[in-house]
Image (cartoon, rainbow, N blue to C red):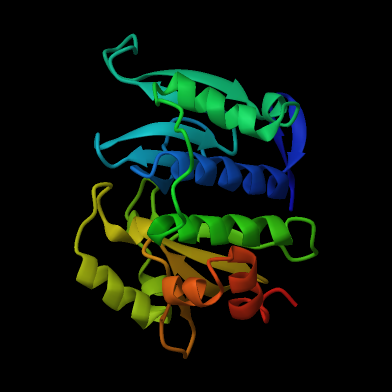
Length: 242
């Protein structure tokens, strides 16, 4: 993948991608009211994993892979909109990973939890996505994980029609869910692309979708694996990790 210029330095996108997923997932494990969405606002280079606070109904943290990481502060902007506290990826890669999480947590006004919650539902999905992205980061064909909701200006904005056509089980799930606090439930479907093809999808509700196979609920498989995420990955994703 082409190196990205961030903070005046070159970073391979796969490294930023893996770290952004780890940071986002750790924040969700510490604060389960947060959900991960993908954002591409029109104001400059923007390719973000954002933490949406479902209890407050707003985007709280923004991890811009093409820029900086920051916290949105309501009412602090000069124009009456959101202000932001931010720092760059060079700083992220020069510090201990958990310190980035606790800094964003503090900047966002989130109280540090006494412990992370048990892995269930969306937390299982995020942990699986993060581990799979990290596992492929140094390979010849790393996975690019993208939301099934196209968050960009223009007429294509909205659910990805071709993805939901390719994975009818995901389309049925989206219809059943109806709506979520962040808007369209398509935001909660994550497509794993490699070699110019989407190989599978994992959704916010811990369901796996593959072509020409029935959707698989991952929580029962997780329990069968003794709640060990590594055993689950070895059992369910062995073909993809070859």
